[in-house]
Amino acid sequence: MIDLALLRLMKHRKEFFALRGRVPKTAIDTQTLALIEDFGVYFKRAPDAEVVDLTAFLPIFRSLHPTLKGEQLQAFEGIIKRLKEDVEPDMKSAVMQSMLELRLGNDMANLLAEWDEGNVPNIHAELNKIAGEFEADANIKALDYIRMNIDELLDTNQDDNGVSWRLQCLNESMRGLRAGDFGIIAGRPDKGKTTFIASEITHMAKQLPEHQTVVWLNNEGKGDRIYMRLLQAALNATPSDIRSMRDSGRGVADAYSSVVGDLHKIRIVDVHGLDTYACENIIKQNNAGMVVFDMIDKIRGFGEAARTDLGLEQMYDWGRELAVKLDFIGLATSQISNEGDGLQFPTLGMLKDSKTGKQGACDFQLMIGASNDPNLAGLRYIGLPKNKLRREGGAGDPRATVSFVPQKARFEDVPITME
View (cartoon, rainbow, N blue to C red):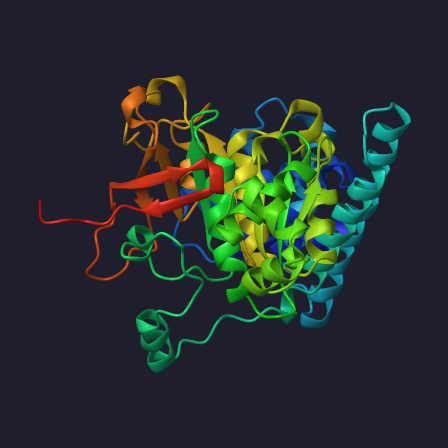
C-alpha cells in the first residue's frame, strides 16, 4: 500500500524531487524503486512536465527495460495503470512520515549490523546522529525561511560591532568577529601559532558576553603548558616577571582575571583521540562563544567516515557548520606546507595537504609568514589571502610586518614611520 501511494505521489515533479533523496532503498520493493528511477528519466526528457503522463511514460518504460517479457512486463504495466489516481491531501503527510520511519528503522538496523562486526567505534554518537537526522526531517515543516528586513540588513552590514583583534593591522582589514564566523590561522611548525593565538584570545576573551567562554580544543602536546602562554600574553610579561609578581605577593590570578574577564574564561581541553561528537559536547557544556580548534586536522570523525578518515575538507566544513549551529566564533589552526617555508607571505594554496579544500570552508585565512634569515627572527608577517570579512575601504590583505615576542607570548604591531 505504501509503495503504491508513494508512486502516486512521486509522479508529480514537485513531490518527486522533494522525496527522491528520502526513499529508503532497502525498505522499498524493487519494482517501486525501478519506477521511481524511470520517473527521473521522464522528468529529464520532459523538463516542462509537472506530472508524469502515464500514456507517454509507457513506451519510455519499455525502452528502458527491453529485456522484460511476459508476466514481468504485465506486472509493471498493471502497476503503472493504477497510478492514474492521485493521493489524497491528508495521505501526503502519512507517506512522508512512513518514509522517514522506514529510513530510521533501516539506518538503525544497518548500524547495529556494523556494530556487531566491530566497525562502529562510537555507537552512542551514531545513534544520536541518526536520531537527530530523523528529527530534523520530521520537523521540516516547522522550518521557515528568513524574512528580509532591508533596514536591518543595511544596519547590520554597516555595523562594526564584533570582537576585535589585538593587532591593529588585522582590525584595519577585517570587521569585528561575530558568532558564526570561521577562520583558519596557519603557520610553519615552531613559528609562533600558539603564541599568536594566546596573544589574540587574551585580548578577545573579555569582549565576549560574561556568560560565554573561550574553549581551546588542544590536539598539540599537553594542554596545561598553554596556560603559561596565556599568563604571559595577558600580563605582557615573561615567566620570570610572573614568578616575581607571585613571590612579592601581588595577585597573579587577579591580574590575569582582570585582563581576560575571569580566571576560567579561557578553558583548555585536551582532545587527543576524541571525535567530532565528543568535541561538540565539550563546546556545548562550556557555553563557548569562541572555539579554537588546535589542530582540527587531527580530530576524528564518526561513523563510516571515521573508518576511512574524514577528508580534511569535510573536517573544516564540520567546524564551520558547527560555528553557525552553536553560535560561536571558530578559529582553526593549520600548518603551512613546505613550499611556504621561509616566505614572508605564503599564498592561499600553501596550506598543508590542501590546495582548495580547507580554504573553501572558511571566511578568512590568516597566514603567519616567517623569514629564515636569523637577523629577522624577531619579525613575523601577517597576510590574509582570503578575507570575506573585509572592512569597507580597508585593504583586504594587510601584508603587515609585526613583532614576534615569544618571551611574553605576544605579537605586536610595528609602528609605521615616515623614514
